[in-house]
Length: 420
Image 1 (cartoon, rainbow, N blue to C red):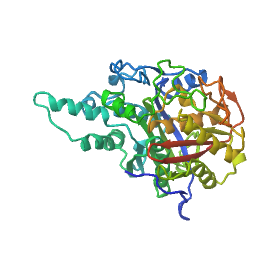
Image 2 (image 1 turned 90 degrees about the vertical axis):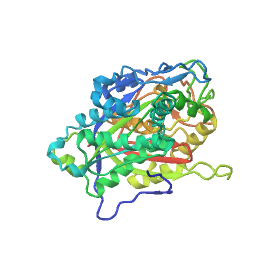
Image 3 (image 1 turned 30 degrees about the horizontal axis):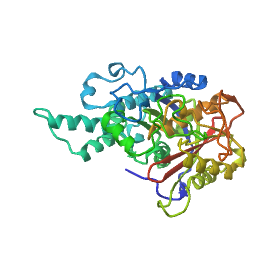
Image 4 (image 1 turned 60 degrees about the horizontal axis):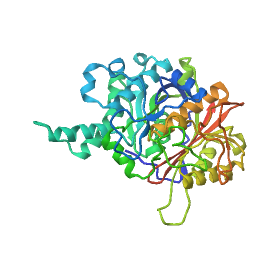
């Protein structure tokens, strides 16, 4: 496990300055299972937020979630793995398979010790833990401690993917909640700079079970509205909280020289990254999200006027939205750069949210279009940003900034550069 606790950009050593490029994308999202299906839904503005169906949520104050539709375990996962895995693991395996297929990498021709898996997780483990707690009360049930149940996702996120695809290189899982989707990419980039050739990275998360739902409710951030079109409204004056979803994206990140040597198509590069940590609550100091963005730009060697679009964290809470909007306006000027929150169509996906935003940013750079923020009509007066609402906005795009915040004070920012 690793956490992003330093207030600095990650500077490569003089001997490790290779570019890291994205060659594959795999998606499991509430508004589309597979990258093409999801991206078409995003550009159409189709939401996957709906009443919970995986269990009876009638007794809970928050009734909505983003559930991945049409996922049949047997279509994606070998039957022998079903008893050993939970939904998060199965979604992760499906996304990893799609990403590797999309990359075109011939793993059999690659040194298996130069390819690895770096993912992130935060909510994963709840479903497995609940299953074990239920077994505790059943006849002959075997008890697994809470620590073991939550440790499960460390093994499944990396181990199952590594075993299935024979990736024996560096592996690991980061736990920084929503920021983890970016932190995993940075750790993967470090491994490439140390001599690796290919990393499966990003995050897929899921905790849509009664135990997981109770934990989400205890955080006090969920919207209690029952209208899917009015429940999650980041930067809106009517913001009421967040909607939780499941899913995310796994991506193939490669050393640029290795990718070029095999003639790989690339979506773009991870040009810059930085992480910061917020001061302790009650200290009177504000969020360090803006500092993370500045440091990521410095790591990428770009100026603010070179950023063409910002994929915002979009908390959906008035205080957090105000702080993020002011950080963006401070760096780029009032209404200075297009800002979008496509996760309004999926809900916040815990660790999977930021990596899905990275996938959206890469496809935006490819297609030269900014996806919309749905359900929000106009940002609040104290959020001076150029929020893209209503419909996609065609625009010349070369560089994108992705922002993420995790519970506990984690901030992360990544700069993506379009493929040549």
